[in-house]
Image 1 (tube, rainbow, N blue to C red):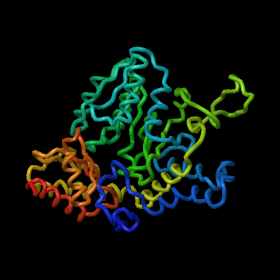
Image 2: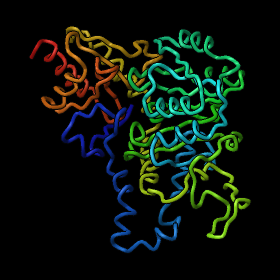
Image 3: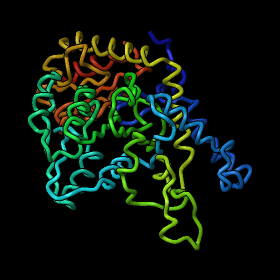
Length: 388
């Protein structure tokens, strides 16, 4: 199990923080990295920033840290300005034809869903949805029924944002590739919860954020693009440093992309966000992903066991410990999730988030959460359930 780490998170002196699946509190080491470059620029001037001095910026070191964490090569990682940027790189870069189909689930976050729907409207595509179910075999049955010769992209969450359901990612990838379709996973709720190896998984794209379970700053994000599908994505937006050469006199025939995922990192960059995300990755890696996963699963099991002491409480995330994550989604009979989340925050300084269209609350049991936090939450829920 994990040693107590609460002292690394100043936020925890003020809040019982159970919303890591929304936006994480920062460990002090990550905050220091986030501020390192801006503070140096204020104190010393922007010369090293303007020169893109790697010793100063440490972007390639950050890229290597992130790549190693997910089992990728550094050349397959593009830092993006936000999660939706990563989504748009893929869905706007594919060579669509009218009638092509995209498969999503019925619980996708708008950051994935809206770029998909926009591409569908612009290119005459059909979007089909897999119903999220508690068991993998049920989801796979629905998925097989939707896959066909027109499927071009499967764009789904590895772990759903509201219910914390783990999708059978390996089988989803295998079945899609048998049909010739590409696979894009939303890893916002998976990375930092359990080990992920994208090469072993075999997916084509894996988009993720730094500011949730990886304990980095908002809105840091990145995109994994498998090396052998890189040239199947045409850059739809571009700028300086995306091409092998660049000058005020360059012509169309000189528009040759750099041979890595860095071609999508054009123009001005918010370097401190990228390196701070890597600092968060390094923090989680030092804890050990096996330890982090075991800690969260133990807390989730404890919450499941103790939840019956709250009158009218209902669990809407997987109850099977083999399928559960550090996300627990709970409703109270007769009280909507928006009201519950607001009361917990205002009366007990407990941070959760409304979920499942405002009917429930989502509880994130991250590495810094302890059993006493779960007990404190359950006491607050019991008070609300009793009308207090």
